[in-house]
Image 1 (cartoon, rainbow, N blue to C red):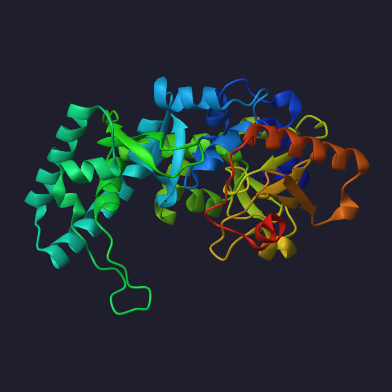
Image 2: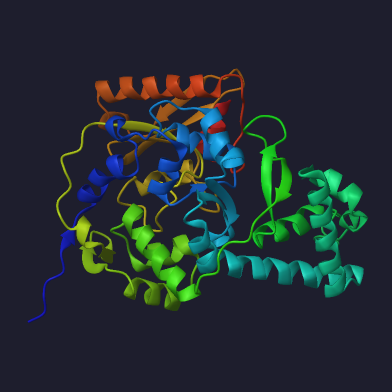
Length: 391
């Protein structure tokens, strides 16, 4: 007789979010490293999101503590990895992420750039390798350098390529950023401190140590298990989407974990044994999460934590979420920072949020405004709701 698969409802999944993602007041963390550990990593495509995702989950938000972890202790590592997306991950997890996803991404980035350089500039692989060596020598001499400083030291980085030739938006950029990006993806260099404030997208570059070598299959199984710890129960499609793997690799990795099959409201899924018990009764909580926060970007199937009718307001056309307001495991609205620094919110389902929750949302808005101080941001991926509120 086939054993029935356990049923895990959307309500139970929402009940776990506050504690597991460190969003309920009692669950907030004391260090940036604890936040990254709980979430596997922090989306870092938009530099400000790293700081704001951590600030939303810390008992005492601190820019200094996060900068210490990133640039002094280096307990957090910035990597181009899952879905060719920039993440900040715990140092202990970096070798797993490297072997399971980042190596393949780096190889594609290198192939693509090598092809462009060969076709447009006539430079071969030997030129590529020599230029890499020159960059490393320049960094060894200086300790750190901006992209512009490296281009002055290694003139080949100033070579220009043509993008979208013949189109109205044709461009002729230098190869500097792409070349350094490939070296960073391969783990040969890494981003150091930003130029300007913590919200800046311009960085100094520093040398990097290579990650320990792990077998790819083993690393994928470990990453799948860690994903389920942070985001499970989840569907196969959730894991495939989050990692960027093929369906075959996703199924193989899941098969090597301790996960069991479970029935979710959206269909069959996977859950670790520890997640089969009913969650503890959650206390009330609210949170203001930034654009591309790891929580709303953690699943392909999102209908269990927000009204899909609000997707056009909360997401851009590429599926990137903007700043969101959460209440007890659901997205209930959005927020934005105005030019004067004011944090403004809008609830998309006003009737579903009580007076106490509204007051808590106002309190979180004030907390985030205090964290910003005099720093102003504009999300890299803007959504209709964020644009409207920012005006």
